[in-house]
Length: 272
Ligand SMILES: [Zn+2]
Image (cartoon, rainbow, N blue to C red; front, side, top):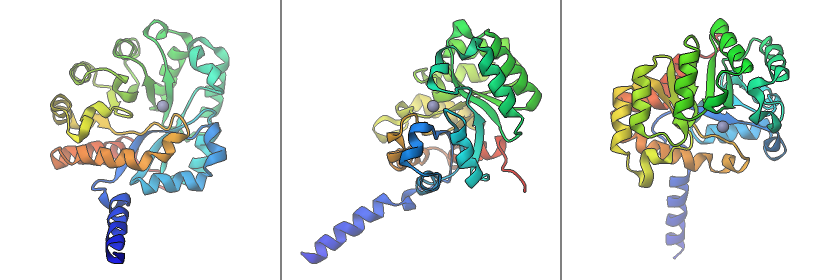
């Protein structure tokens, strides 16, 4: 009996650890926003990332100070993106808010950021003055724009602002694989991250349409968690275990690109 209990414990421990991970992960969608600070210290948040197999991560936060807290502790792990929201109230109207523009221009002077976002936007507001200014800043400084928008809005953004590279959050959240594939063919400045897209492999089996798009465009995709509420930190390890399952169903070089190498190529770590 004692032996049985012991074997069961070994089994549980064996499946819970990062040992199940096959690929290192570049996570393209992490937030460390104000509600998270009281629950997880920067050290704890970084150890959760490491425990989930995440070697590096794009981090943006509301307010941006959260990103700086993590970046100061781990500048080689954290790829800082500047989120334009001072508080959550900025989410709906930032596109035409001069105050947001001034805030972003001021903080970019730190010179550490690799992108602006994640931001939310509807197609109707894609030509807002602050959006236009962000596109100019991104083009001048070679920053990505991480946009949580639908497929109509991402096409409009890429048409209005052809210079900067866009990182399309959640692949539009509900856009089908075929639509994502068409947009990738149409816009060479488009990159896609798959945070929260459990439809890529519902039930653990890689969807054939997603597979086809990944194999056709292996250098354009990254995975992501999206810690949009504090409870997401608790499931990060499980989430990435599921990601590893479908990555393992792809040709190895495609899986490696999506898991890690695309992030590493697009956001090379700081040299010093
Ligand atoms: Zn997000």
